[in-house]
Amino acid sequence: MEKLDAITLSVLQAALQQVCDEMDLTFSRAAFSPVIAEANDRSDGIYSALDGSLIAQGSQGLPVFVGVMQYSTRTVIEMIADGRCLPPEPGDIYIVNDPYLGGTHLMDVRFAMPVYRDGKIFCWLSNTGHWPDIGGSVPGGFSASATAVEQEGLRLPPVKLFKKGVLDREIYAIICSNIRVADQRIGDIRAQAAALLIGQDRLNGILDRYGDETVVEAIAELRRRAAEQMRANIAAIPDGTYRSEAFVDSDGVVNEPLTIALAVEKQGDTLTFDFAGSSKPCAGPMNSVLATTLSSVYLAMRHIFPDVPISAGAFEPLIVKRPEGTFLDAKYPRPVSGCAAEVSQRIAEAVFAAMVQALPDKVTAAPAGSSGNFALGGNDPARGRDYVMYQISGGGYGGNSGHDGLTNGCSTIGISKSPPVEIMEQAFPVLYRHYALREGSGGAGKHRGGFGLAYEVEILRGDARASFVMDHGRFGPQGALGGKDGAVNTVTVFRNGEEHVPPHLSKEQDIALKAGDRVRVGTPGGGGYGDPFERDADQVLRDVALGYYTAEEASEKFGVVLSAGELAVDQRATDKQRAS
Image 1 (tube, one colour):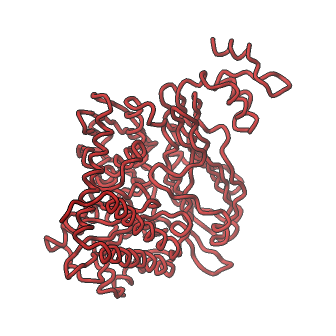
Image 2 (tube, helix red, strand yellow):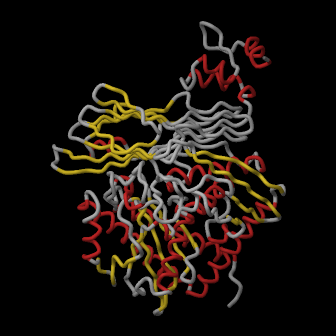
Image 3 (tube, rainbow, N blue to C red):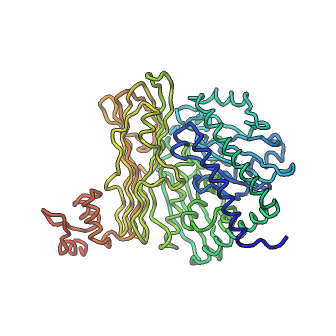
């Protein structure tokens, strides 16, 4: 075959990306659950038939799944090879959510389907969707006090949910018998399967047009170029070892912080990530399985070098030492419900804090770093049915060398957005009494952090139970290069006329609520970047005029004094304040 020309290679790269994007779109549009249909907590990708290596992933899929689905698809292939899984046939779709087999938490349910060409598997298509409930001790699966994975919900090894294109009613019945609001899951299951079938159809169209050999050659070349591009980026970093720490508030059971200790060694064109010295496996659900730990490093580097195309090649120069003996390498039966949405973001924060030392012009201060997992389950007497509501929320991004952090951005690990208030109020018996920017929450800096979100939800009718697995309630997102930390996460429950703050600040489960009770949440602001006293005084004045900070905060945080009686900078007083 002649060498693949650049135009054809570019067209095929875009075509493979489009296949994944169309799968993502199909999944969201067909799903029943707001967390998928509105918040886009899902991802789709194409994977190698040989070893499950990533070929392409949807641009609108969650970045945290980029390494996870590669790991889980590889595990399915290995289990088929050694007889632990039934061998595939055309039309088969496997379901798996076992976190120890390359997953995240149990609510992230993965489907995997082989695509056949001339009787042989050409590749695998895989996707992940966050189901709003998977059973377990609390509605929504976020059991803040779980001490074993069985308390978190139903754990599925790879099994064929669809056999030759037909849903296996027996396996489906087993799943439905172990989860809440089971009647709604068929919509998500059909949507998840439909996304894979759409992907298969679109991929076959590309293969028919360009030929299997040409596409295989393009995939290999794209992987080689991604590795080459990542190596070139790394080579520009000064050789050395860069160290950092990040902290998890607590594990939900023992009210003490967990430490993520990271040393990043840059040598030549590779980076080695060593988490030795991190906390030991914990009692509660803030353990991270290896696949999530790896994926967290990969996605952090994607934030730093977004120009590198997503494929397995981009990961080749990134060496992650297995963090054995720490809570970042969880093994059965350690609980893990907090790993995907919370611990993963602390890992990414540790990577940012290390790499900002080496690449101050490319890396930001720490973002909010919490998905704000709030699960509410109960009965709606007006509709005569049970429900499980899952709320995720954004926060502030960290400032960087060029500008302030993004306000109310999505989590570090994803592109998921908060479901619209109007949709949530239609679907569940709740009223959002307040939903606004959390003023003052951005960390001070030459370039300040972005602001978090403040919201308050009231239960309108029936009884309910609330659970929270959040983070950054004890420590705010880290500032960088002299910048200050962003504001911490806050949770307050108002019930029976009294205020309740969880003892673990950002984590608690099974809080009984009734009509009229309220939950108030303030998400973290991003960390500041650079010395706050170097911030342009007119920018501080503008922030005060917009209500982001008070005049007192302007003086305290930024050393900018405003004239009494009018909104203007008192330059002489400001110079004196900053000089002191």
